Image 1 (tube, rainbow, N blue to C red):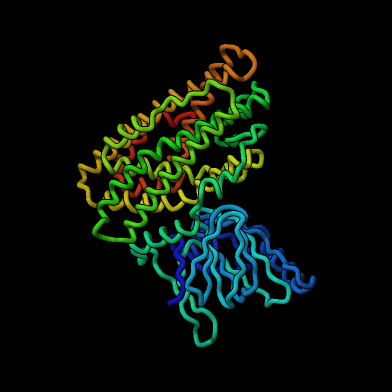
Image 2: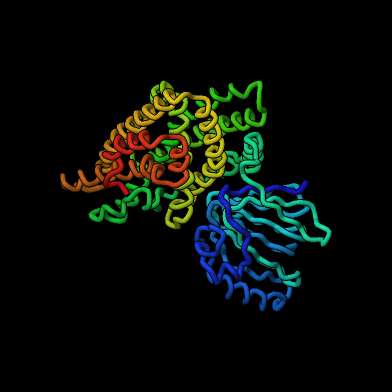
Length: 475
C-alpha cells in the first residue's frame, strides 16, 4: 500500500504547470479556485536553462502560494529540496509510507524517484529547489483533489488514483491528527522561550489585529505600547478560553473510552496540549509584567468564565471552541506570520501555539459533527440559542477588558489625552477586540462553512440578527 495524502474534498483536476500558466484556474475546466503562482511558464523555463549551469548549486523554482486543498506534484524529483517559507504543509512521495509534516522554516530533501506530492495545510508558501546534475523535475498543479499514491505501475512510474475524501473514515482522521501531534510537539522552555525575553522596542500584535494604526492621533511609540497591551491581553484571553476547552475535551473523550482508541488518543493529546498552552500563557503574563509598567489588570477569572461556558449545551461549547480554533489559525496565517515588526519571541509563542492548534481545529470539528448527528432537531435548536448566548457573553467580557486596557494605557502612555481622544482609544480597543475574538472567526470561510452545514436557514437568520449589533461597523 502506498502513502496516502488526503487534501480537500472538492472535485478538481491535475493540470500540467504550463497549462495552468496559460489558463486561469477559474476557467481551466477543472472547477479549481484561482491561485497565485507567479509567472510559472517563464520561471520554469528559466529554471530549465539554469539547471546544471552552476556545478553543485541548487536552482530555485518560484515560490508557490498554496491555499487549503491546493496540491503540487513533482515527478522525477529525487534530490530536490523542498522548503516551507510560510504556513504548514504535507509532503508524501512514492514508495514511502511516511507523511512528512513541515512548518515554516523546515526543509526536506526528496529521497525517492518518482512522484512527490506537496499539499497545503490551511495555506502555505513553498519553494522547490532542483539540485544541479539531477534529472529535471516536472511540476504539476492540482486543485483541491485528494490523491492516493499506489504501487509502481508496469511502466515504472507511480500510478495515481483519485479517492473521495469521504472514503477516509473518522478513525483515520483521528489517527492522522495523532501522528501530526507527535511530529509538531514542542516544549515551552526548550523550543519556545529558549532563555529569551520580549523586545519591548517592537510591537506585539500586528496592526491587522490591533488596529492601532487607525488611532492616528497617537505617536508611533504610543501605538507600539497599545499593541503590547493588546498582545498581553491576547495571550491572557487564550489562557482563559483554554481552561474551558481542556475541560470540555476531557469530558467528551469519555464517549471514546471503550470505543475508537485513535479518537481517544487524539482527545487526550488535545487536552494535554491545551493544559500546556495554559502554562505557556501564564509564563507570558509573568514575562510581560516584568517588562511593562505596573497597573495592568486582566479582569476576567478563568474558572468563573469556564463554569459559565460549561453550563451550556455541548453543541454550543464545541461550536464556540471550533470558532476559536479557526480564528487562531486565521490570525497567525494572515497577520502574525507576515509581520516583520513584531517582537521575535512574541511571534514564536504564537507560531508554536498555531502548530498544535491546527490539529485541534480538525478534532473539534469531528467532535462537533459527531455530537450534532446524535441530537434531535429541538436539541440542535437549543444549541443555537446557547451559542448566541455565549457569543453575547463573550462580547460583555470584551467590553470589560477593553475598558481596563484603555484605562491602563491612558495612565502609562506618558501624556494627557483629551476626553475625545480617550474615548477614541476605548472605542478603538473594543472594536479591535470584537474583530479579534468574534468577527474575524465568523467571517472566516472555514468556520462559517462548518456552521452553515449544521444549521437551518431560520437558525442562520436568528444568529445573524442577534450578532448584528456586534458585527456592524467592525472590520
